[in-house]
Structure formats: structure tokens, C-alpha cells
Image (tube, rainbow, N blue to C red; front, side, top):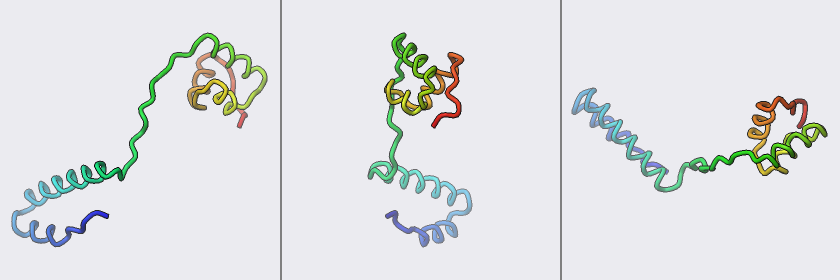
Length: 100
């Protein structure tokens, strides 16, 4: 839980003027953001490495697409995301529409 600092805002805003108050708010926000990240409050996206499509994977994608296999099953077979699989199929001119 983040500390509640409303009294500090009131005291600071009356003492230093609007410019000083905005500088204080900016510093406070940056400090709170740093504390939240250090405590693990937000989850960062995993860094995934891009992998090139091999000729074997492309051939498998074509075969499964012709068999009307659902996009999710194709993706799982190829160990790719559904989005990557759909994007590759689209760039090859294959249709994966109307599949779950």
C-alpha cells in the first residue's frame, strides 16, 4: 500500500507556489513508481526472441491450413502464438478464417 501524503500536498502547495508544487508532484510520482517496480507491483512483459520460420514449419502450416485445422491447434503444433501463425498464413496468402 502506498503512503497517503495529502497533508504534504496542502502544506507544500501553500508555501512554494504552483511551479514548486508541480515539481514536487513530479518527483513524488517518480519515487512512487520506482518503489512499485522495485517491490514487484507491476509485471513486465516477457522478452521473447523472434524466430525465423523454417521451411519445415512453412510446409506444415500449408498442410494444416488445407486440412481446415483450427488456428489454435496449428499454432500449438508449430510452437508459435496464434497471432504469429495467422500473420504468417496471411503473408503467404493462406486463409485461417472462420476457425476457432
